Length: 271
Picture 1 (spheres, one colour):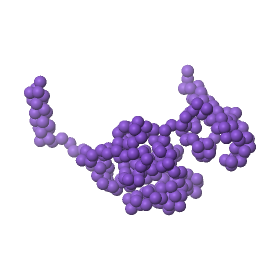
Picture 2: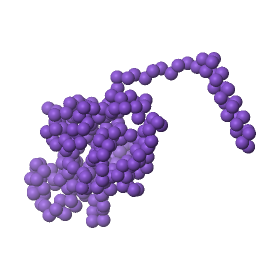
Picture 3: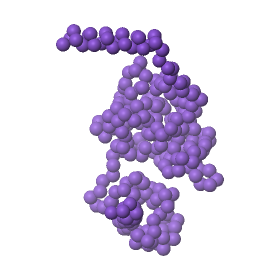
């Protein structure tokens, strides 16, 4: 089967899932096509086109539709939603709030920047649209889909990233998607804003084990009910440029050989 045919089939399957989900969720809410169209601000003919697989919504509209039906965009475009369907696990709903964002004049989502001096205030203002809109902001064209935020980190717990490095993170809506070994910005009531590596899965025990890349710092756990937001690290910005790796000298090679010989001798003694 050619790549072109595979692409066509993938697109058809994608449209079929969206069509099915819109129709099922609309009827579940007891809405006609016209009522649904009025509530999300589009023409009724578009609803018909989407449900009959004659067109597919753009990403911005997908987000609006998914939010209207209270499902994630990921589930909406990838999962067949029916009576047997159940959403992926999230954190404790009592601790989740609507994510506030800001957009530029072209309706592109900004990347809001949370500097060190604003970290403490962010715990109270992260869900306040006015607070978020007042944060410094910028736009990176390589991040066109998803919601991103930048956080300035402090300390030396994640070396070689030094204090003052800016971590650009993508908003993680489904905490069950956390991957062990990856790094995240965790916003919590007890720890504030921290950048750590996660060990294990959230869905296993409803808690996260956070690990520093600097072995001087001990790992610790944080309960899901304490977490406010999670942002998956996607990039970093730093004025600290990496130093070139020095070429080995005769002295360093001699030292390495001596260390290897000592290790071999120790192994032989233990056998």
